Amino acid sequence: MLRQTLHMLGKEMLTEWRQRARISGVFWFAFAIVLMVAFATPNSAVLPQVAGGTLWLGLLLASTRSLDQSYAVELEHGAMEGLMLWPVDPIAIYYGKALANTLVLVLVAFALLPLVIAIFDAPVVGNPLNLIVIVLLGCMALAAPGTLYGLITSQARGSSVLLPLLLFPLVVPAVLAAANATTKVFEGDPMEQVPSWLALLTAFDIIFWSLSGIAYGKLLED
Amino acid sequence: MLLGPNGSGKSTLIRCLGTALRPHHGTVHLGGHNLWEERAALRSRIAYLGHQPHLYDDLSGPENLSVWARLGGYTPDIPALLARVGLDPDRRDPVRTFSAGMRRRLALARILLKSPNLVLLDEPFTALDPAGRLLLMEVIRSLQDSGATLLMATHHPSVARQVCGSALILDAGKVVYSGAIDGMPESVMGAS
Image 1 (cartoon, rainbow over the protein chains, first blue to last red):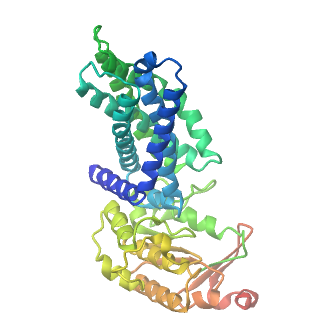
Image 2: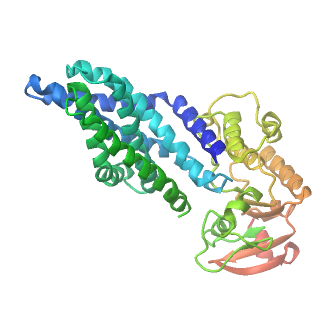
Image 3: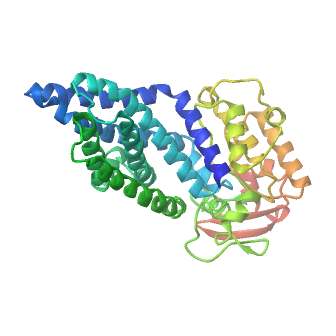
């Protein structure tokens, strides 16, 4: 299964590379949200306080575009059906796609992060290495249920509307944890709250990366 | 060969045999195995060419075959496979630039990655030019020579009879004829 997962990841990254405009579209969408929040904030003194939340708001909204598009590729010529009928473990399909979706979000997040720090004048008082961990865990938390729900909504009419409706309520705890932890890294963490938020993110990831893999196979066949 | 008017259930039957659809009633058996229950193991032995080519638009022909081969754990000679279906192995353009007939040929090459016991073809002549049809017939014959069983849904019985030994005619989901091609109603052959 590991071999198939890696081949699936390789296929996903190859198609993403061939459609580089898609990743840049996801980035510009997230960046537009960040800019809108920055311009809509009336008091520039509070900008550093909302930087973490804005980063994750941008990533959350952009993730639905990215997830939606990752299934559009599979539906163009029935490739999803082809995958289902090929001797490939559905769990490998899930983990390959989920890892690829995570990588795309991580790339967008790391491209967005310096811009958010600059635009919101966020000081990064805490340990910057924590930011890397938060981005990785946070993107994994968006990608795991997103890849599962992307499959459910991909063949529905209005999938781009349905996906956020299903996904957003589910990932609220993860987005809150990621946003709070990011803010603590920006502003400093005298009460040492970052480890608690990271623990919540880790628990969320463990639960959804295990359960979604199991559910994916059943959903794919139905 | 599988014949019948539009909407008679040919594609549905082929999709059930290809494990793309779970039968609502009854069971399908292949070589004594329950097809749906044991689909994971049996899929490597079934080649299904349906209406969709199951290809990635942004990848080239060789890349598509390479992706599917790696996923299935196959190690084919991809240039030879492309040449076998009449495609240029050196062509690196993405599949989105291919004509419908070229996509069909590539889809055929894709199912040849497997060594199937059962080959399911749903309207295989669609979009193929005369040379493509001849090539498809050659490929089908070689699959039959290797021991594979063929089921082909088609509206071209006069062409399909060159490779098929018996016929099944469906109408509104019911079998209205099952037997030798020579015994088929004249109206069916005439309709082609």
